[in-house]
Length: 250
Image (cartoon, rainbow, N blue to C red; front, side, top):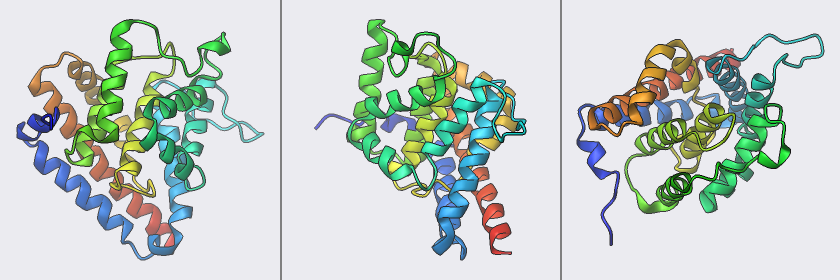
């Protein structure tokens, strides 16, 4: 059996501890008394907040119009992705992701970029450079079981790789954050997608942009710093989830 290609990441400073803290925080919020039965409602609220934050990271407007629609295609796309990842949609898309990651990524792109590309034939289709196909194939292997690193680490790697690779003509950021959520659901890290790490990525947008760019250099220290940032956002996203559940419980 070939060695796990991501195993060395666990030896980078703070990565293992950050991943464990993220996992413990998300596990705890799933045990919240309200989430034991009412998780479908809190999951929808979490997806709503995630979509708005993901759009804002890309410069989208999050102001609602009178008809309850957003006023720009970036936010429209981010909210379509959010809806596909809420309590009603995650089972279907998550099943596809576990079996055929490339197909799920294509679906995320179609949702994210429907209003951003002029040619509908480009929706769901990665750019044609050979290295893109190779890297997407590698990600697919990781997602379907080639790596057994803790789920927060895998989610961070998938997220960072999609940001740096930018496989599609538009909408890559929304797709990357959606894929991170799919990893969290598919691995059981956050099966109901209650966490909202996107809020922290937006609040720390300078760190988010800088570290995601450095992730693409392949430098070990930069990769470790990116993973730690993602894990910290997941832990903070669990605290956001707790506030949602607390409010729902009254």
